[in-house]
Length: 148
Length: 149
Image (cartoon, rainbow over all chains, first blue to last red; front, side, top):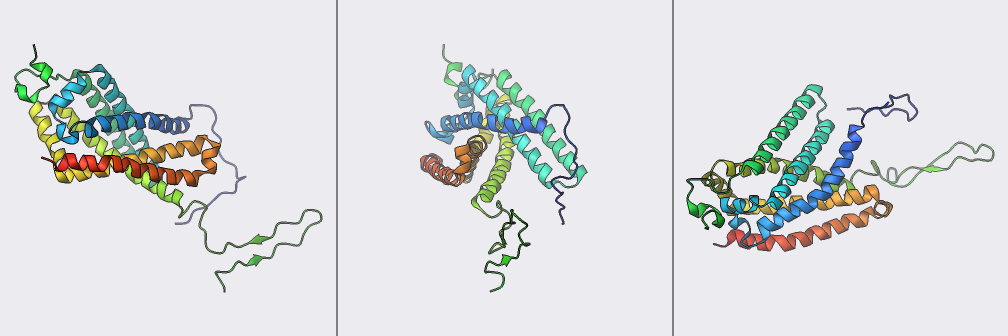
């Protein structure tokens, strides 16, 4: 494949007005990246390092966490910032490697669809979640479900 | 020794007060200033870890969504995260996240801070060192959790 590098002084189209979305995407990756370092390392530390780590993860553990507004907000920020950060990164990679226009449109459409569906699903799960569903065996639920 | 030694390219005769600089051919094909160096490999690893983490995230949102189905369904799926093979997968996941996070912070320092741009090579090695420290802190403890009964 040959690449033509244009003369630096060749005439080119200059942006006129409008929102520079690529610039804001660039800024978003850096700002969300810094926040995600805190959110993800906190998430990993609490879920994989404290107590028995991965062995302690079950419905009761999630029930205990998601009944606390602090972790609800933490997980909501994690969901939105991480998924949009990841989707924008995948978009960048698609732009770099998908030379066929139709392939690029299909791939980016799939990324967008997956992102929107998972953002809605994840947010609904966080805020409609019942840590003590009726009729479930008590030994599968957090201890506060049976207390009192 | 053709091809290896530096050759001097004859430059045009000096014009008056401002002679043109003498140009020398590079000793070996250098490609670009970017290709082949540590910077390229951190770029490659940033992409690979980023894609891997993205696909894990898709799966992880779906498996967590099972808390909305039933305690039994969630516990059945999260149980698979506790077997030894998945335990090793979690080591790979944390290694990938740690590298992507530290390298991302390095990119930010290089982008926004003149000191970071000047000392980018030092920052590359700081990333590697912090990444190793992170894994020394995580891997033994995690493997003890995974392989203990």
